[in-house]
Picture 1: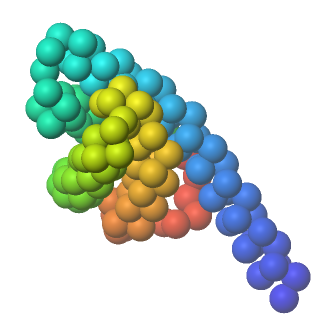
Picture 2: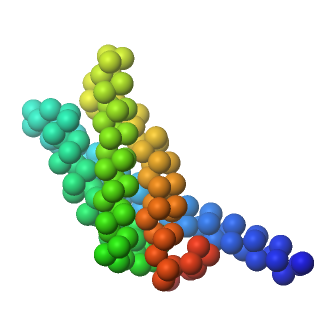
Length: 144
């Protein structure tokens, strides 16, 4: 009984460490993505195309950084799921930007407001559907 409680506390601690790593890596990826997005908007590209170009670059960078530094591995199966999840995330991001425009916000502010929504959605979907399904990475495994 004591061992079971200890194991669940250790697993919960590991999840917090993973979440913190996700946040740190995600913050760098988000900064990179936002700089690309803002540069494209500044260059006169509309927010729909700017978002699409940004998401393509962000998917590639994020798969390698999140897969390696947060979830501990990279595989072809995970990449396919990752792309599918990011299609969902892109649509959610575009939805937040569109709502922002309807409320009179510009694309810069709308993009900033989307960050926390997309960050939480991204973690939940990656944790549950992308990297958790690969048999080589059990839920409580450690990243080295």
